[in-house]
Image (cartoon, rainbow, N blue to C red; front, top):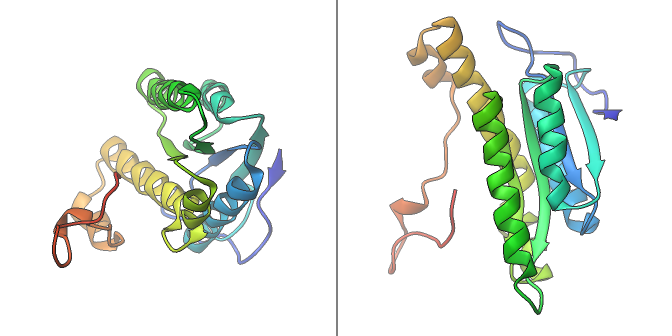
Length: 191
């Protein structure tokens, strides 16, 4: 495991910075490395760098579930960001992998109670993947980290009874694709 790069001092929250594991698929690394950079930036923007962010690499997207399950079982983390990139091929193999990964990561959250953010691209081409890894479509690694950190904060509010209105006031603006712009409504896509 490698620690996140040192940056500014730990800014944390009342209950300290979130302890997060980022599990990154090494398959399609040119895409997942860019997503990892976005995830690290989102974490350090909120908490600064330090010992609370750890990163592990796994072979492919399918192996993300095993890493997330091990993180949950260890009790050392508040949450996991799973980063991967599945690009459609000539067969339906990508669909089976994507479905299994989505179900597996959801299962980790359901069985353990630990939030797991789904930062796995399921795209038709490498061009689409690059656009979502720091290109025109943003950085889905950053978005996954932001979603995880927001969820961890909500879980802390529920567990501690902190005033949820205070937390909501500190919150960030979440994209609303359903609001739409121009003809045809919102942009295509989920999450």
